[in-house]
Image (cartoon, rainbow, N blue to C red):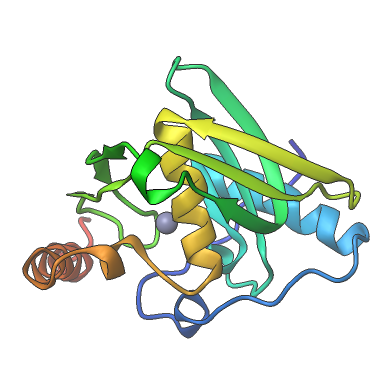
Length: 177
Ligand SMILES: [Zn+2]
């Protein structure tokens, strides 16, 4: 791993609340960004990371995340397009979700338990990822990030307030000596 871990942007940072721009050049800069994204994700002990979580407004995410068989799958998707089962074919998983950009709290978020993501690798070759289990949730969570949306934006108002309160409490705890 040659990338450099960068600081994770937190809730309230404008780049997290704005749709990211499509990648137009599959060049060395993109490859370096992706290496830094992997390094940042591993340093933060996450299973997925979107570019705007390290302050870059480009449509790219990385993941290293277990599927329904508990097999870890790793990759990068540039300019992702999400495909979900039709409404009548969906099984909704109500598992807990958290986010590196909202450290501390977790909350149940209903999401389809299958998701497919189409996009490109760092070289510009088309890729398609079929996600089950946590990976299905991850593909949806990361695509949301690139659309300027956080999982808390999908919560009922009361739950959202409770999550925000827990987050703020965690942020205001003075540093220990
Ligand atoms: Zn997140």
